[in-house]
Amino acid sequence: MAEPDQPSTARMIDFWLGGEHHFPVDVAAARAFEEAYGPCAVIFRSLREFLGRAVRSIADAGVDSFLVFGAGVPTRGNVHEAAPEATVLYTDVDPVTIRLGQRILAGSDRAGYGFGDATDIGTIDPAQLHRFVPGWGRRPVGVVFLGLAAFLDDETLSRTLDELYEAVAPGSFLAVDCAGEELAAYPRALALMGPAFRMRPPAAFGPLLGRWEPTADGVGPVARWRPDGEPAAVPDAFYGVVATKPSA
Image (cartoon, rainbow, N blue to C red; front, side, top):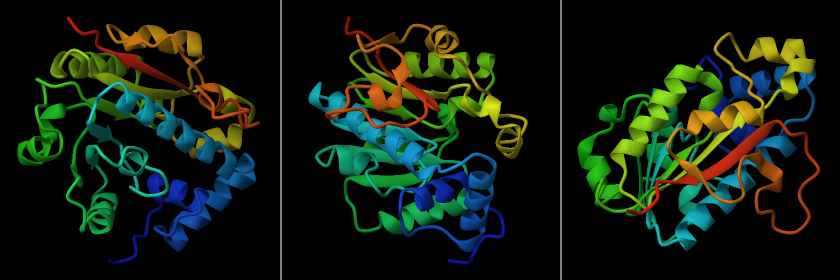
């Protein structure tokens, strides 16, 4: 595929995770951010480990299909690797990332990749939704909504999560995170995130979940959400939660 001339957060994260699906423009952007903030690999590995633990907890509850928004590059412990028996539909809005994801998953019959705007469920291809998330709206599903809340204002985030709540069947789960206030002390790094980037203390994030009911773990630093052993010693840059739409 042609090399892009603009960096992508998804491919920057792939670089930080030690993946192979990024370009020099992504590496340059990642290095620039590190110069303004510091090492990022440990933070994004911690976030990816949270994704894995959250997805496995949802699968252990009996959910066998997942819809992923803002999916990025579907490698390095992403949803279909964390829950190999489940079917997964990855979605994103970046055409380069979508093509890359489709190429990576070309040989899979359990995971697909297509366009999907997290703030408008109707943008998802119904055929893909039917194939990879069978029983959408009738059977419990897992919705993965990571890396997106930081780029949505409170009103849009609340509306989007409420629309997802309405769309899914009872017994469904939501995995979602928010950016804490870590970058407030690093103005150069904060500026690189752009004007849409929003930091939120965890106490402000919980109310935005609306009718979604957090598990007993609540909202907390991703490294300390059901850790496998001793939690990783990383800055509290991201807070995460798994929430559910209770069964009737």
